Image 1 (cartoon, one colour):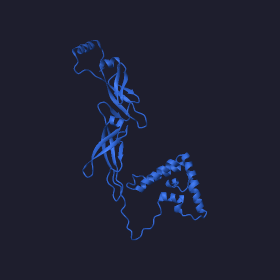
Image 2: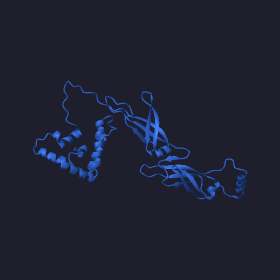
Image 3: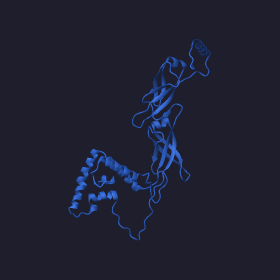
Image 4: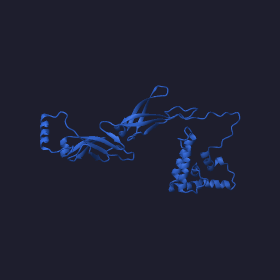
Length: 298
């Protein structure tokens, strides 16, 4: 079994360190080996993964105790045997495997006649964007897209849209970017998501907004109205005297929040009148004009 020296990964020579020391060591090593600062380096990428793994184990007291016990019962005992003078070849021991894990096996000196090959270079990532409707983003699914490749030819992709994907979130297609050099890995294709509003819904954060069109008598007298939500119909109670611009909030009927919950559906009242009222309607409006003292401009 191979054990990783998590303390050495975070820059410590001993396990006698505090939680605060571990946090500081993690920040220093993560900054040093972050992939954004070492683009194209597969060694830094692997080291960065080890740094995160080491911090995850050592920052938790329970997992740290378990790790220390495992280390002492395996690697620690083996080191003590070696220090007591037993001539055991390091590469055949667990401790030797640990050293090999972090620093690589001891390299043989290159012969003068051997020539070093060119370094592997990872290909560049390519970024593009696609538009989704609110419904497509909310429910997820698969979507076929066509993109123009570097050689000018169109290439088809089928991408999986996670349900509830957020605006500006990116989908990564591994290995679909520019080709690597000298045997290096290809770059990735990053697809940024743009969620489009439509006539029915507007997305703001995790909330969905919709228009609640009301007749003058519904607004004046109050009513129970059915409105469309993203998953079906909802019934809302409109209080009498509601004004245009007033909002009715329906909890947990909005967009997914990425944490298992949802935002709200917010219906904004808009009082509508017929564009071409009938003669009877005109008569009623004229009568209302005579009997009413209401003046919204005062």
